Length: 385
Image (cartoon, rainbow, N blue to C red; front, side, top):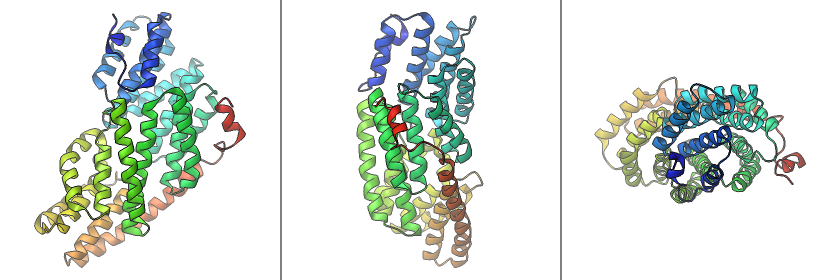
Protein backbone atom coordinates (compact mmCIF):
# COMPACT_ATOMS: atom_id res chain seq x y z
CA UNK A 1 0.00 0.00 0.00
CA UNK A 2 1.36 3.44 -0.91
CA UNK A 3 2.00 6.11 1.71
CA UNK A 4 -0.81 8.42 0.56
CA UNK A 5 -3.41 5.64 0.77
CA UNK A 6 -2.17 4.52 4.17
CA UNK A 7 -2.79 7.96 5.63
CA UNK A 8 -6.51 7.73 5.04
CA UNK A 9 -8.92 10.66 4.94
CA UNK A 10 -8.95 13.27 7.67
CA UNK A 11 -12.07 13.14 9.86
CA UNK A 12 -14.87 15.09 8.23
CA UNK A 13 -12.83 16.35 5.25
CA UNK A 14 -14.97 15.57 2.22
CA UNK A 15 -12.48 16.89 -0.32
CA UNK A 16 -9.69 14.69 1.02
CA UNK A 17 -12.00 11.69 0.96
CA UNK A 18 -12.76 12.39 -2.70
CA UNK A 19 -9.07 12.81 -3.55
CA UNK A 20 -8.31 9.50 -1.84
CA UNK A 21 -11.05 7.80 -3.85
CA UNK A 22 -9.73 9.27 -7.12
CA UNK A 23 -6.18 8.13 -6.33
CA UNK A 24 -7.33 4.61 -5.48
CA UNK A 25 -8.88 4.29 -8.94
CA UNK A 26 -5.33 3.95 -10.26
CA UNK A 27 -5.11 6.79 -12.80
CA UNK A 28 -2.04 7.24 -15.03
CA UNK A 29 1.21 8.13 -13.28
CA UNK A 30 1.16 11.89 -13.94
CA UNK A 31 -2.52 12.29 -13.09
CA UNK A 32 -2.01 10.32 -9.88
CA UNK A 33 0.99 12.49 -8.96
CA UNK A 34 -1.03 15.68 -9.48
CA UNK A 35 -3.80 14.32 -7.29
CA UNK A 36 -1.28 13.41 -4.60
CA UNK A 37 0.21 16.91 -4.72
CA UNK A 38 -3.26 18.41 -4.46
CA UNK A 39 -3.90 16.13 -1.48
CA UNK A 40 -0.64 17.33 0.12
CA UNK A 41 -1.84 20.91 -0.21
CA UNK A 42 -5.08 20.00 1.55
CA UNK A 43 -3.18 18.22 4.33
CA UNK A 44 -1.08 21.35 4.84
CA UNK A 45 -4.20 23.48 5.05
CA UNK A 46 -5.50 21.22 7.81
CA UNK A 47 -2.27 21.38 9.82
CA UNK A 48 -1.02 17.87 9.02
CA UNK A 49 2.37 19.27 8.13
CA UNK A 50 4.49 16.12 8.50
CA UNK A 51 2.19 14.12 6.24
CA UNK A 52 2.13 16.93 3.66
CA UNK A 53 5.90 17.29 3.77
CA UNK A 54 6.45 13.54 3.36
CA UNK A 55 4.17 13.41 0.33
CA UNK A 56 5.85 16.41 -1.29
CA UNK A 57 9.30 14.90 -0.70
CA UNK A 58 8.25 11.54 -2.17
CA UNK A 59 6.81 13.17 -5.30
CA UNK A 60 9.89 15.35 -5.79
CA UNK A 61 12.10 12.26 -5.59
CA UNK A 62 9.88 10.34 -8.02
CA UNK A 63 10.05 13.05 -10.68
CA UNK A 64 13.62 14.27 -10.06
CA UNK A 65 15.05 12.67 -13.21
CA UNK A 66 12.13 13.38 -15.51
CA UNK A 67 10.28 16.45 -14.28
CA UNK A 68 6.76 17.08 -15.52
CA UNK A 69 5.43 20.64 -15.76
CA UNK A 70 2.03 19.82 -14.32
CA UNK A 71 3.41 17.84 -11.41
CA UNK A 72 6.00 20.55 -10.70
CA UNK A 73 3.30 23.22 -10.72
CA UNK A 74 1.09 21.27 -8.30
CA UNK A 75 4.09 20.63 -6.06
CA UNK A 76 4.86 24.35 -5.94
CA UNK A 77 1.28 25.04 -4.91
CA UNK A 78 1.49 22.38 -2.20
CA UNK A 79 4.80 23.82 -0.96
CA UNK A 80 3.21 27.27 -0.90
CA UNK A 81 0.32 26.01 1.24
CA UNK A 82 2.74 24.23 3.56
CA UNK A 83 4.86 27.36 4.05
CA UNK A 84 1.82 29.56 4.56
CA UNK A 85 -0.06 27.41 7.05
CA UNK A 86 3.02 26.43 9.03
CA UNK A 87 3.91 29.99 10.06
CA UNK A 88 2.71 32.44 7.37
CA UNK A 89 6.18 32.27 5.81
CA UNK A 90 7.10 34.74 3.07
CA UNK A 91 8.37 31.73 1.11
CA UNK A 92 4.73 30.82 0.48
CA UNK A 93 4.27 33.69 -1.94
CA UNK A 94 7.40 32.71 -3.90
CA UNK A 95 6.19 29.13 -4.32
CA UNK A 96 2.73 30.28 -5.40
CA UNK A 97 4.26 32.63 -7.95
CA UNK A 98 6.24 29.67 -9.29
CA UNK A 99 3.07 27.56 -9.43
CA UNK A 100 1.32 30.33 -11.36
CA UNK A 101 4.19 30.71 -13.83
CA UNK A 102 4.46 26.97 -14.47
CA UNK A 103 0.72 26.42 -14.84
CA UNK A 104 0.43 29.40 -17.20
CA UNK A 105 3.28 28.12 -19.39
CA UNK A 106 1.84 24.60 -19.39
CA UNK A 107 -1.67 25.89 -20.19
CA UNK A 108 -3.30 24.37 -17.11
CA UNK A 109 -6.19 26.80 -16.52
CA UNK A 110 -7.59 25.11 -13.40
CA UNK A 111 -4.26 25.26 -11.62
CA UNK A 112 -3.51 28.73 -13.01
CA UNK A 113 -6.79 30.03 -11.58
CA UNK A 114 -6.16 28.36 -8.23
CA UNK A 115 -2.58 29.65 -7.92
CA UNK A 116 -3.71 33.17 -8.86
CA UNK A 117 -6.49 33.00 -6.26
CA UNK A 118 -4.03 31.91 -3.56
CA UNK A 119 -1.67 34.71 -4.55
CA UNK A 120 -4.55 37.17 -4.23
CA UNK A 121 -5.11 35.84 -0.71
CA UNK A 122 -1.44 36.31 0.18
CA UNK A 123 -1.45 39.79 -1.40
CA UNK A 124 -4.36 40.66 0.86
CA UNK A 125 -2.51 39.41 3.93
CA UNK A 126 0.47 41.57 2.91
CA UNK A 127 -1.92 44.51 2.34
CA UNK A 128 -0.94 44.88 -1.33
CA UNK A 129 -4.28 45.86 -2.91
CA UNK A 130 -2.96 46.39 -6.45
CA UNK A 131 -1.40 42.93 -6.65
CA UNK A 132 -4.49 41.45 -5.01
CA UNK A 133 -6.73 42.99 -7.65
CA UNK A 134 -4.53 41.76 -10.51
CA UNK A 135 -4.46 38.22 -9.21
CA UNK A 136 -8.19 38.18 -8.53
CA UNK A 137 -8.91 39.27 -12.10
CA UNK A 138 -6.57 36.58 -13.41
CA UNK A 139 -8.15 33.90 -11.22
CA UNK A 140 -11.70 34.80 -12.22
CA UNK A 141 -10.84 35.12 -15.92
CA UNK A 142 -9.08 31.72 -16.03
CA UNK A 143 -11.56 29.81 -13.90
CA UNK A 144 -14.22 27.77 -15.64
CA UNK A 145 -17.53 26.69 -14.02
CA UNK A 146 -16.01 23.46 -12.71
CA UNK A 147 -13.01 25.14 -11.07
CA UNK A 148 -14.74 25.36 -7.69
CA UNK A 149 -11.62 25.59 -5.52
CA UNK A 150 -10.28 28.60 -7.41
CA UNK A 151 -13.67 30.31 -7.53
CA UNK A 152 -14.22 29.71 -3.81
CA UNK A 153 -10.81 31.12 -2.86
CA UNK A 154 -11.12 34.15 -5.15
CA UNK A 155 -14.62 34.90 -3.85
CA UNK A 156 -13.39 34.58 -0.27
CA UNK A 157 -10.59 37.06 -0.91
CA UNK A 158 -12.95 39.57 -2.52
CA UNK A 159 -15.28 39.18 0.45
CA UNK A 160 -12.67 39.73 3.15
CA UNK A 161 -11.24 42.74 1.24
CA UNK A 162 -14.70 44.34 1.28
CA UNK A 163 -15.17 43.40 4.95
CA UNK A 164 -11.75 44.88 5.80
CA UNK A 165 -13.00 48.12 4.28
CA UNK A 166 -16.10 47.94 6.54
CA UNK A 167 -18.42 47.24 3.61
CA UNK A 168 -20.15 44.12 4.84
CA UNK A 169 -22.95 44.84 2.36
CA UNK A 170 -20.47 44.30 -0.48
CA UNK A 171 -18.75 41.39 1.26
CA UNK A 172 -21.86 39.28 1.86
CA UNK A 173 -22.53 38.31 -1.80
CA UNK A 174 -18.89 37.30 -2.22
CA UNK A 175 -19.02 35.30 1.00
CA UNK A 176 -22.16 33.56 -0.24
CA UNK A 177 -20.49 32.72 -3.53
CA UNK A 178 -17.41 31.37 -1.72
CA UNK A 179 -19.62 29.24 0.50
CA UNK A 180 -21.53 27.86 -2.49
CA UNK A 181 -18.41 26.89 -4.43
CA UNK A 182 -16.66 25.40 -1.38
CA UNK A 183 -19.75 23.41 -0.39
CA UNK A 184 -20.11 22.01 -3.89
CA UNK A 185 -16.46 20.97 -3.91
CA UNK A 186 -16.67 19.47 -0.43
CA UNK A 187 -13.85 21.82 0.54
CA UNK A 188 -14.42 22.03 4.27
CA UNK A 189 -11.06 23.74 4.80
CA UNK A 190 -12.26 26.71 2.75
CA UNK A 191 -15.57 26.76 4.64
CA UNK A 192 -13.53 26.90 7.86
CA UNK A 193 -11.37 29.68 6.39
CA UNK A 194 -14.51 31.61 5.48
CA UNK A 195 -15.83 31.34 9.03
CA UNK A 196 -12.43 32.20 10.50
CA UNK A 197 -11.90 35.27 8.34
CA UNK A 198 -15.39 36.60 9.02
CA UNK A 199 -14.84 36.14 12.76
CA UNK A 200 -11.43 37.83 12.59
CA UNK A 201 -12.83 40.83 10.73
CA UNK A 202 -15.65 41.19 13.25
CA UNK A 203 -13.18 40.99 16.13
CA UNK A 204 -10.96 43.66 14.55
CA UNK A 205 -13.95 45.92 14.03
CA UNK A 206 -15.09 45.34 17.63
CA UNK A 207 -11.67 46.42 18.92
CA UNK A 208 -11.60 49.42 16.62
CA UNK A 209 -15.13 50.46 17.62
CA UNK A 210 -14.15 50.27 21.30
CA UNK A 211 -11.27 52.67 20.68
CA UNK A 212 -12.43 54.94 17.86
CA UNK A 213 -16.22 54.86 18.19
CA UNK A 214 -18.98 52.49 17.13
CA UNK A 215 -21.13 49.64 18.42
CA UNK A 216 -18.31 47.60 19.94
CA UNK A 217 -20.59 45.34 21.98
CA UNK A 218 -22.63 44.25 18.95
CA UNK A 219 -19.51 43.53 16.89
CA UNK A 220 -17.99 41.66 19.82
CA UNK A 221 -21.04 39.41 20.24
CA UNK A 222 -21.02 38.62 16.52
CA UNK A 223 -17.29 37.88 16.70
CA UNK A 224 -17.66 35.47 19.62
CA UNK A 225 -20.48 33.61 17.86
CA UNK A 226 -18.40 33.37 14.69
CA UNK A 227 -15.39 32.18 16.68
CA UNK A 228 -17.45 29.39 18.21
CA UNK A 229 -18.68 28.32 14.77
CA UNK A 230 -15.12 28.36 13.46
CA UNK A 231 -13.87 26.27 16.37
CA UNK A 232 -16.64 23.70 15.94
CA UNK A 233 -16.01 23.35 12.20
CA UNK A 234 -12.26 23.10 12.71
CA UNK A 235 -12.80 20.35 15.26
CA UNK A 236 -15.09 18.47 12.87
CA UNK A 237 -12.63 18.46 9.97
CA UNK A 238 -9.64 17.81 12.23
CA UNK A 239 -7.86 21.07 11.42
CA UNK A 240 -4.96 22.30 13.56
CA UNK A 241 -3.52 24.83 11.08
CA UNK A 242 -3.09 28.31 12.58
CA UNK A 243 -5.01 27.08 15.60
CA UNK A 244 -3.91 30.05 17.71
CA UNK A 245 -6.14 32.41 15.73
CA UNK A 246 -9.41 31.63 17.50
CA UNK A 247 -8.11 31.91 21.10
CA UNK A 248 -6.33 35.17 20.22
CA UNK A 249 -9.55 36.43 18.67
CA UNK A 250 -11.49 35.45 21.79
CA UNK A 251 -8.99 37.23 24.02
CA UNK A 252 -9.27 40.51 22.13
CA UNK A 253 -13.08 40.37 22.14
CA UNK A 254 -13.31 39.46 25.83
CA UNK A 255 -11.15 42.48 26.55
CA UNK A 256 -13.59 44.66 24.59
CA UNK A 257 -16.43 43.19 26.67
CA UNK A 258 -14.56 44.23 29.85
CA UNK A 259 -13.69 40.69 30.92
CA UNK A 260 -9.95 41.29 31.45
CA UNK A 261 -9.23 38.23 33.60
CA UNK A 262 -10.57 35.86 30.94
CA UNK A 263 -8.78 37.75 28.18
CA UNK A 264 -5.48 37.73 30.07
CA UNK A 265 -5.71 33.99 30.71
CA UNK A 266 -6.10 33.34 26.97
CA UNK A 267 -3.24 35.67 26.08
CA UNK A 268 -0.92 34.02 28.59
CA UNK A 269 -1.78 30.56 27.26
CA UNK A 270 -1.72 31.22 23.51
CA UNK A 271 0.42 34.26 22.67
CA UNK A 272 3.68 32.32 22.50
CA UNK A 273 2.14 29.76 20.15
CA UNK A 274 0.63 32.56 18.05
CA UNK A 275 4.08 34.10 17.57
CA UNK A 276 5.46 30.75 16.41
CA UNK A 277 2.62 30.54 13.88
CA UNK A 278 3.62 33.85 12.30
CA UNK A 279 1.48 36.34 14.21
CA UNK A 280 4.38 38.19 15.79
CA UNK A 281 3.50 41.32 13.79
CA UNK A 282 0.55 41.76 16.18
CA UNK A 283 2.95 42.12 19.12
CA UNK A 284 2.49 45.83 19.77
CA UNK A 285 -1.31 45.61 19.80
CA UNK A 286 -1.43 42.37 21.81
CA UNK A 287 1.05 43.52 24.47
CA UNK A 288 -0.79 46.84 24.79
CA UNK A 289 -4.02 44.93 25.41
CA UNK A 290 -2.30 42.69 27.95
CA UNK A 291 -1.10 45.86 29.67
CA UNK A 292 -4.63 47.22 29.71
CA UNK A 293 -6.00 43.98 31.13
CA UNK A 294 -3.41 44.01 33.91
CA UNK A 295 -4.19 47.64 34.71
CA UNK A 296 -7.92 46.91 35.04
CA UNK A 297 -7.10 43.97 37.31
CA UNK A 298 -5.06 46.24 39.61
CA UNK A 299 -1.66 44.90 38.49
CA UNK A 300 -0.34 48.42 37.94
CA UNK A 301 3.44 47.81 37.95
CA UNK A 302 3.13 44.78 35.65
CA UNK A 303 0.83 46.79 33.37
CA UNK A 304 3.42 49.52 32.89
CA UNK A 305 6.11 46.92 32.19
CA UNK A 306 3.89 45.38 29.50
CA UNK A 307 3.21 48.83 28.09
CA UNK A 308 6.94 49.46 27.73
CA UNK A 309 7.29 46.10 25.96
CA UNK A 310 4.40 47.04 23.67
CA UNK A 311 6.14 50.29 22.73
CA UNK A 312 9.28 48.38 21.83
CA UNK A 313 7.24 45.98 19.69
CA UNK A 314 5.81 48.77 17.53
CA UNK A 315 7.90 48.93 14.35
CA UNK A 316 7.52 50.00 10.70
CA UNK A 317 6.48 46.49 9.64
CA UNK A 318 3.22 46.75 11.58
CA UNK A 319 0.00 47.13 9.65
CA UNK A 320 -1.47 50.59 10.06
CA UNK A 321 -4.63 49.41 11.82
CA UNK A 322 -2.62 47.33 14.30
CA UNK A 323 -0.37 50.30 15.06
CA UNK A 324 -3.38 52.57 15.53
CA UNK A 325 -4.93 50.07 17.95
CA UNK A 326 -1.68 49.61 19.86
CA UNK A 327 -1.13 53.35 20.26
CA UNK A 328 -4.76 54.03 21.22
CA UNK A 329 -4.52 51.36 23.92
CA UNK A 330 -1.23 52.79 25.20
CA UNK A 331 -2.59 56.34 25.21
CA UNK A 332 -5.59 55.18 27.25
CA UNK A 333 -3.38 53.38 29.76
CA UNK A 334 -0.87 56.21 30.14
CA UNK A 335 -3.70 58.68 30.65
CA UNK A 336 -5.09 56.47 33.41
CA UNK A 337 -1.58 56.40 34.93
CA UNK A 338 -1.38 60.25 34.86
CA UNK A 339 1.35 60.19 32.21
CA UNK A 340 -0.26 62.74 29.94
CA UNK A 341 2.84 63.50 27.87
CA UNK A 342 3.16 59.83 26.92
CA UNK A 343 -0.57 59.66 26.20
CA UNK A 344 -0.42 62.69 23.89
CA UNK A 345 2.61 61.27 22.07
CA UNK A 346 0.73 58.08 21.27
CA UNK A 347 -2.44 59.99 20.40
CA UNK A 348 -0.60 61.84 17.64
CA UNK A 349 0.98 58.73 16.17
CA UNK A 350 -2.34 56.90 16.47
CA UNK A 351 -4.10 59.51 14.32
CA UNK A 352 -1.41 59.15 11.64
CA UNK A 353 -1.72 55.36 11.60
CA UNK A 354 -5.53 55.47 11.56
CA UNK A 355 -5.50 57.87 8.60
CA UNK A 356 -3.16 55.48 6.75
CA UNK A 357 -5.55 52.62 7.51
CA UNK A 358 -8.48 54.59 6.10
CA UNK A 359 -6.52 55.20 2.90
CA UNK A 360 -5.77 51.49 2.65
CA UNK A 361 -9.45 50.64 3.07
CA UNK A 362 -10.26 52.88 0.10
CA UNK A 363 -7.44 51.28 -1.92
CA UNK A 364 -8.83 47.80 -1.20
CA UNK A 365 -12.21 48.76 -2.59
CA UNK A 366 -10.64 50.46 -5.60
CA UNK A 367 -8.65 47.30 -6.35
CA UNK A 368 -11.90 45.34 -6.65
CA UNK A 369 -13.33 47.62 -9.32
CA UNK A 370 -13.90 45.79 -12.58
CA UNK A 371 -14.53 42.42 -10.95
CA UNK A 372 -17.79 40.75 -11.98
CA UNK A 373 -20.77 41.48 -9.76
CA UNK A 374 -21.16 38.35 -7.58
CA UNK A 375 -24.93 38.65 -8.02
CA UNK A 376 -24.78 39.02 -11.80
CA UNK A 377 -25.72 36.43 -14.47
CA UNK A 378 -22.01 36.07 -15.23
CA UNK A 379 -21.38 34.96 -11.67
CA UNK A 380 -24.28 32.54 -11.93
CA UNK A 381 -22.67 30.96 -14.98
CA UNK A 382 -19.55 30.16 -12.93
CA UNK A 383 -21.85 28.04 -10.81
CA UNK A 384 -23.10 26.20 -13.85
CA UNK A 385 -26.57 27.74 -13.56
